[in-house]
Length: 357
Ligand code: NAP
Image 1 (cartoon, protein in one colour):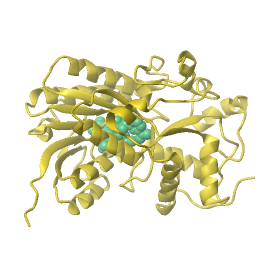
Image 2 (image 1 turned 90 degrees about the vertical axis):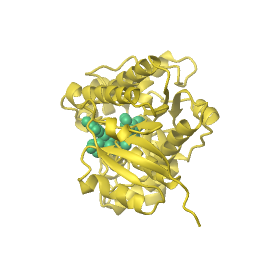
Image 3 (image 1 turned 30 degrees about the horizontal axis):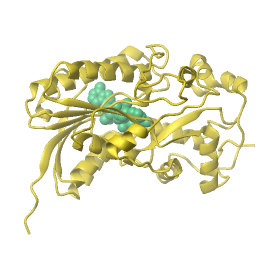
């Protein structure tokens, strides 16, 4: 029997991340030789899981060192690649110390450095950028400006800045920059995916992705005074990896693609968790008033201005474009939620205890 020739190479930036690890796995399983950049290829906490995945796959994985802040850092990893997946970007939502240093600079400089490397690399034909729904909207209150009652790909976040929702601002600035750089050349095209809150089991036990923090809140008593009237627009991490693959393979793919399976409130998520894991966790039992939630917000690490523009508003997205253009179907959010929480339990990140009365 002959071994099939490996496809690729393809580049995945930030290959050790929560989302990117699933993408690397899927690419390796399909026979692509993957170049993955990481900040420290010799840190086993960041790379062991990738090397383990690669061992079971027919294709090979090569790790390259690259920091978003360093111009030229991506050139050697990109050499010979037709496809580039740019996923690396700092994801810090709570307790940002210095928004410019910690978010805006690495996100935008990184996008510039990766795309300038694409301009220098003759083999590149397509770049798939991992943007976010936070480049589409700033706060749930923005829904009031949307007559159709759902955000779609024509919308841009116009309400975030470096003080208010700086992570969202970093994603907006970097996606806009990506379109600007892509528009100035014609050798490679840009396809963007805009995932919602990504949940579902991770491939590394050391991930601290936002979804882990959100799920941990349900197990550690963060909502012990009740559920705020907030909604999350959720997508499964495996569906996000699949969408990246489809965005890269479909020759007709173009533009932006919202990736959201469904929107659920904090209380709906709590009910799903209680239904599966019982009463031994401090899942909220009732919704608190917006006035009370506003008072509690700073204690929960949320600035009051952010709470005021998100409490009590629905958060809805139109995912029709990803369904029709990429052929996406979405796992039910309940599946992602239950499997994610189970992983936190297995990893000891949440512990069974009696409900707080
Ligand atoms: P993650 O696990 O924190 O991954 C982020 C990746 O970016 C990591 O590989 C990280 O490397 C890398 N990175 C951060 N700063 C860097 C720097 N200065 N130089 C080089 N690499 C750097 O988060 P994720 O959830 O997988 O996010 C991946 C992408 O999806 C991001 O673009 C994020 O904005 C987007 N996204 C995520 C969600 C979500 O809910 N998770 C939703 C929408 C969009 P280190 O491991 O070395 O820090």
